[in-house]
Each structure stands twice: as structure tokens, then as C-alpha cells.
Image (tube, rainbow, N blue to C red; front, side, top):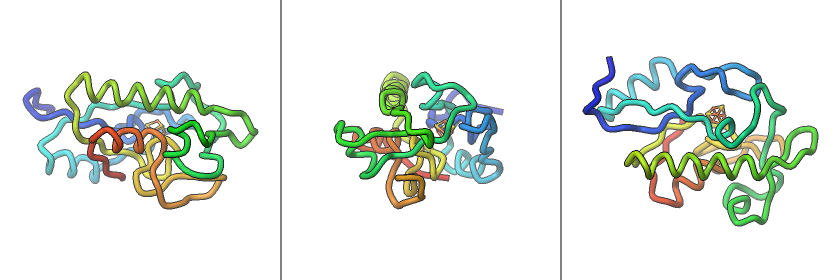
Length: 151
Ligand code: SF4
């Protein structure tokens, strides 16, 4: 049972079982997420940047086009779908909405889904392949002092 007195931690909604992934599924964090929340004495605040940025579920898979998330945040790179559509604005809107939620709710820590072009912390997708580096939302959170970790 959640304790209202525990500190809030942002968690990628798909890790909490929400079916918001590009393929309409989830990516349950299972016991690993539960264990980490217990260690932190935290309660999960589920949030999906891509859905909050206005993208549908299911949706065409997308990735950072060529450089990385920091370049996307500077307006020097794009997020594109496998079909070639530019979805940068939706990814940026989702990242900003995630940061606003953290700031509004006093959230200083985020547990995010690895490999996502939004949520990946250590690994994301660039040009269709996994690379070391954060996704767009994880990068914006880190730039603004939110501690991020990936599952
Ligand atoms: S954007 Fe993040 S929360 Fe949403 S489905 Fe992708 S990994 Fe999960």
C-alpha cells in the first residue's frame, strides 16, 4: 500500500504497467521497480512523456535522427519516425511537461525506461540503433537537476 508521506518519484508510466508504449504494450518494472522504490522510500508518480506530448498509442517507433538528445533540446537535431515523420515537437512538449510535473510536485528523482528515445537514461536510440546516451526527456530532467536512473 502506498504511503502518502513517502517522497514522490517520477516513473515512466509503462514501467508501472500502463499500456502506453509505441506498440500499445507496457514494460512492467516488476520486482526491480518495487525494490528500488522501497529502497528510496518513495511512491511512484507515473508519467508518459510521449503520450503527454500528444502522440497516439500505438504509434510508429521513433528515434533521435543523428546526434543526440542534447542536440534535439538545442534545436540542432530531430526526432523522426521510421516512416520519416518529424515528431520533434511532440517529444519536446513531452519532455517539458515531464519537467513541469517534477517542478510542480517537488519531484527530484526519476526512474525511467532504458532504450527509449524519451526516457532512456544510459541508452537511447539514434538512427534506429541503441547508443550510449539519454533520451530527450531524461536529458532535460538531468539538465534541470533531477536525478535520473534507468531500468
Ligand atoms: S515515453 Fe517513456 S513512459 Fe512513455 S512509453 Fe516510452 S518509455 Fe514508457
